[in-house]
Length: 400
Image (cartoon, rainbow, N blue to C red; front, top):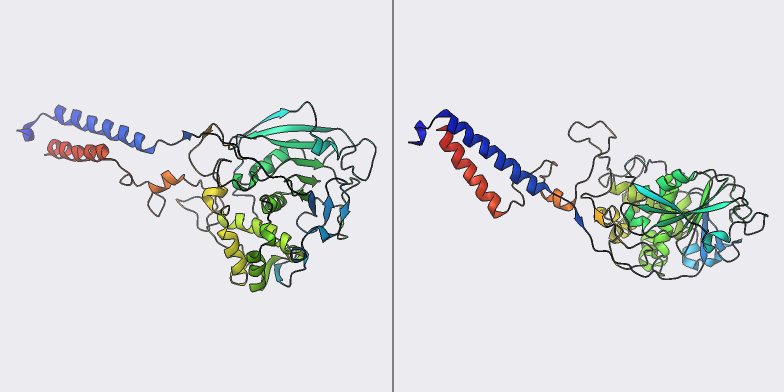
């Protein structure tokens, strides 16, 4: 009976099947949902600072006088020179290319916050880092409901737009530990590196409050390095002073670079930069670096809740536990997908070498096979399965 059906019936049936199949596919692939906002209190800590010349110098300072002092502000175990042999003179890999830049909105504040204003003075003084006019801007990124404040001196080498871009490129899981950012020029009265290193090159320091001060046009790796300091001290009990971290250092033979060997605090910050690289390169070490000689340090870093792709690139500040993060409110809506553009060693699907590849959200990842292709059979619900069965039956009858 059906075998003798007219061709117009067969065509209509096939068209209906195609429409139903397309509709079901669109429903299965829908992503994005609003998140409830929550705000957690940040702990307050002693005002201790470290000062880094790019990623190659260190000192400590009091935030009340901003006068650099010796490294006695660190514990004895944290300030001790490491016996590790550096693998490279400096971190020589590109950590920037895979990093996603979230969109942002800016609002100029009518007044400069006190934690910025104390470093600005028309007349040079020991505490002056900015001898010109300073403005404060609240920057709200699309992955965080809390605004970040950037205070910038009018004659700073780094523009506001550059500072916003580099802060935004710090993965959100790490960025949420950063408090106020202060951007000032080279040549400030209080920028001399405490270890005798020339202060004429771009450098920065981080307070345990999470405030970061940047002198000159500081590059992206140093933004991640300084954010690593903010994360290290956020809970009030530094990771870099823990027995586990010090034990990991003691059981390894190498450090990523010379600067990390200054002390356990700087080694932790340098390993933070390396962890960001690893998580955007499928855990592949940069050329010229070996993991075996740093295996204990790498294992320690990987054991921290921050250093996994789901947390570090979460696309929202509302991740993890209340561990001292300064920004914990998520945006009203979160776009599907993790906010990172990994660069795999072997380009996938014909992409050019070094081309950014978007990482799917966990839900989307579950609907892909190991090769990254859409797998429509994964996560299909009962009605959709029944539809597929009906499709097969109708097609079979229509084609008979």
